[in-house]
Length: 213
Image (cartoon, rainbow, N blue to C red; front, side):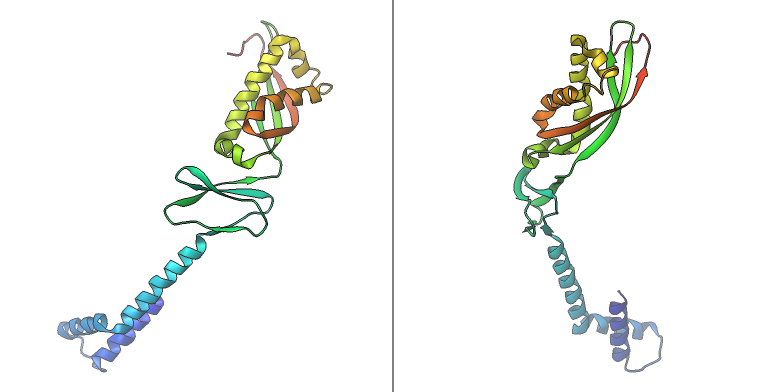
């Protein structure tokens, strides 16, 4: 912007031929000469060209270490970047990065697990789940909502397991049965193409005689 102002000032000074008159007629004439000068349009053209070049450069996306980049076109997966130094030019108005899915372990904590142990005992379980993605492409449709899906899935499956006579396995003997609980969880979440690596119970909160819905 400063460059444009400097050039406009220079062109104006040249057009005025050193005149110091500040009359409205001279100002209008100077303004006309500014817009008739080819220098102005050369500068504006150069700025527009620079903006276009920067935009196109920014459309080039590169693969991320220890992650898979999903390129989407028309709502469908178009390209997958998962190799070192791999890059792709995002076609304007057609392509966009749908997700960058890490191959590292991820974790989240929740207190939305409710276990019934008979009609007079309800427990609220606070837990932390650690997992990793096995198939990034197959996992992609779930990527944006995976935590909500897992919270609901674990509550449903572990409550069913508790109702089959294993409530104390979850709320009392969970340390001794960690491998079994992890196996049950992995069977429940395999449809999301992930693998649970750790299920850690942090707090078990008795809620008295209330029943989970």
